[in-house]
Image (cartoon, rainbow, N blue to C red; front, side, top):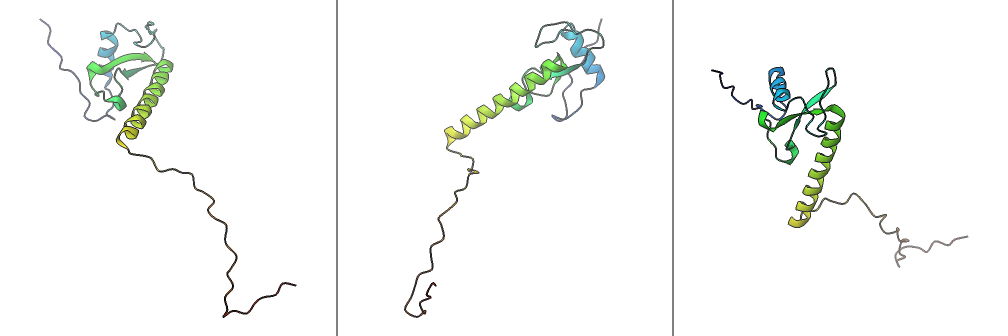
Length: 125
């Protein structure tokens, strides 16, 4: 009779994944990269990837982790961040929240000083 292992849940989104959990994740997915579907060979660099990215509402727990080849993982991370930015921009626009513009106009040119009756007229030579 085997003992049930409780699921690992990270204490924070930055919590490091312990080696024992990495091994369980690798074995659960039969050593295949969940992005490319290719088998990860011995000595190849791989990472534990969040299936649903943390920036898109995923949780830092064992059931949301899968092995991914390092180069494929970096590509997926870029895509996840781009998706998050797009969703944030659309949501902000829908709610009427706008990011302040960083463009600034040159403004108006300085006007020549006005003449007045109390000041003497300066003659140009």
